[in-house]
Length: 281
Image (cartoon, rainbow, N blue to C red; front, side, top):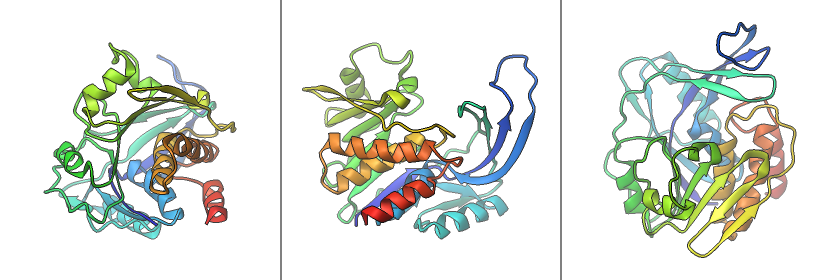
């Protein structure tokens, strides 16, 4: 069992299932799927809890009914929410438009800036995961390096992400990488980065380092909902790392986790992953 700290969002997703793919000027019928727990904090954290780890979430939600609901739902799932801060005002829903082929379009409100406090003590933390644009997160990451695994998702802009392992999807990279992938990773994650992993859905993931490039296959699965697949991949990777797997073995474990994630119709991991992890334990 490992102690894992996440800086990631906690969202109230509202799902609209469309009758056809989105296109400009189109008219669509939809079914309202209601509210569900989502965001990188839940999508990553719940699987890690099921794997037997202690998971603490750092984020911010509004001081309103939706904020109360989010904290209650995440806590019920076993995530430690003692570091979640409350801000005045509303916690707005994330709107997810789901098409019949399992793809989604996300519309989210502008979030108020969330400023992290001073970094924690890292002595008792085994892994630190970043999937947030919170102010001060780079300072936290820099202070954590050398004490625990630091895994970070590529930001939507070019802000620094000091880390051991930088994660990105191939779509995140479109139009952004003007040099080799490894040089790009160093420009974002710094000279201490050990690995850069680029995922590409059913085509698997590519591992880059200073000395190698290696392809790791995806696990074949029927895609129902791709929401949360990247978060589940990160969770599986972290689980592998804290259990002393090699990075390639951890990527193979991550592929299993993300395969279960896309095979269920929810943002958070489904029963398939829970059963798989129960069998492992």
